[in-house]
Length: 238
Image 1 (spheres, rainbow, N blue to C red):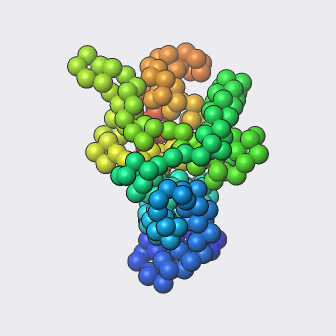
Image 2 (cartoon, rainbow, N blue to C red):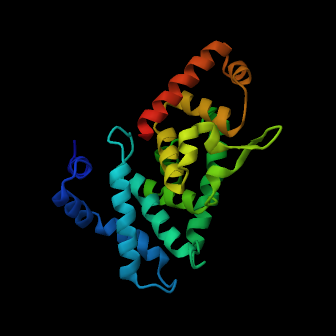
Image 3 (spheres, rainbow, N blue to C red):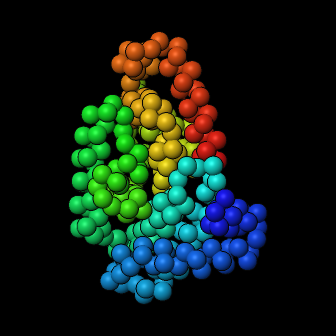
């Protein structure tokens, strides 16, 4: 286990010295995010302090079993904390660079998904775009609506069904941007076939029978796979 993961483990166990160390060692990461929100009417130090809160939240929520770099997980949470702070005054703006990267990423994501039959992971997409995973996650997050967890994925007879409802009722009660980020990271850690099933089932609203037909297996197999995938996601989501 590398030093960062060791510190995260200690912080989660209540070690105050480890908390100070991890903030000190990740100042550059917090500043790199905070600088993107300068000239919004707030002092740089204030933005850094808010970003540091986001960093600590990511430390406490980070699952050491995630197959994801901590910085990749932390960046959008730091950004989310600053965005929430600025949103109260309607001050938030997204840079042109992030908007352009978000558009390029979404276009390439659709292209690669069509070519390979499964969505690319964050690392694969970042490599294809020749950007860091952290910058890509930040761009994708900036390009999403804040309430994206509450987008309508299916309209029932009485009321709409939201994405977060379909992933987990428990998560829906505590739904937030942080949950959205964590869910996306968990999905990225799944195997390609598992990712494909999740996207087809919960993002494209396909039935188990439709998925089984496309993949070439039985509906029973898809049902078993789905239960196993959701169990894995809940465990990793913590």
